[in-house]
Length: 485
Image (tube, rainbow, N blue to C red; front, side, top):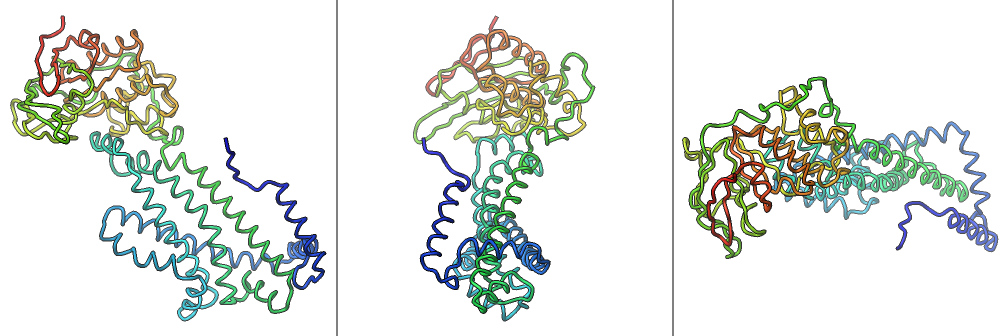
């Protein structure tokens, strides 16, 4: 397997320096090609010179200002363009222009409007802005429909949506863009200074070395610029890596969501998630097709609070589709889903999806609390529910490090705690051994005894655990079956 190198091999650097020395000795014209020893001596002479460091700070301040302005402008533009197509169309010409116009042309034009001292700020901003814009726009459009659906169902929005669901997808693009464009910012900034020749800049030092045929000095200043570029790039990338867990809601950094207080009753209460409803759920004539393939056809049944229903059918028979229609995530081609006392209205729905849909970097308890109001009763009961589900030791572990069975229970805990009157469970106990499955099913049954519960399952054990009524779905048909004994 090929290795990917992330840094220069020391032996390769030594080899090229040796080749440089040999070429310099062979040519024997220091004015055209000074040797590395001469350049190194000039560079060492610059280190104790205060004037040199003032030049470095002068250029650094303006390059940093242009870099920050370009990154902010590009980021704001990407956020707006990702939301409104008209903004993307409006920004396309200037972004393309900023990418294609040579730095020299931008610099000469900018000299008409700006003092030479501030020239690098504008030039660097125009170099950085389109690259950050394109990278962030690409990251913002790297969507995960499954997570977006879960966030919509549970009402996760605002800062929580950004931190736990959007930033983990966006951050790699942002980190790559900022780490790459900083090196380009130094190149563009110093190039602008060479043209504008602001007093006290690194660009002025490069220009003076050229004018006075100080080739060794030119090499030394150039190496100093490369070193400054490499150092600042390393610092920015290190800072971004250090900030990533906090920015993306990583375990140990979502402290508001991970506080485990002392409000533990020793057993899980039955008040989690909502108040329940006395009305029944009624499905009438529900039909759904995909590309001329009928998945559901004229499905009709009702579900009463306290009497769970199990949808039993082979894979591909429409169980998940039916749950998604009840949850409002899909629309039926025909038919209605209503409450028997208030047609046209559905109370709050919660769901344990078949594929978990967790924020991988967030802890188990943070995932469970995402749909909850801070300080609410369910918020405080979250730790006890996780303990009851056998997840006490995993409470602060990232969901991405948990096993399949643990992830199922985290998703189930989130569904139980989220405000709801209807609970939908799609293969909720897959990945659990028999003992854990039975314990978890009994816990769910006790917590949801006053609510409407619909379970999609292949396993008759779930029917027995919930004492559920069976609705058999098969090839676009359904057949109600009696309650399990």
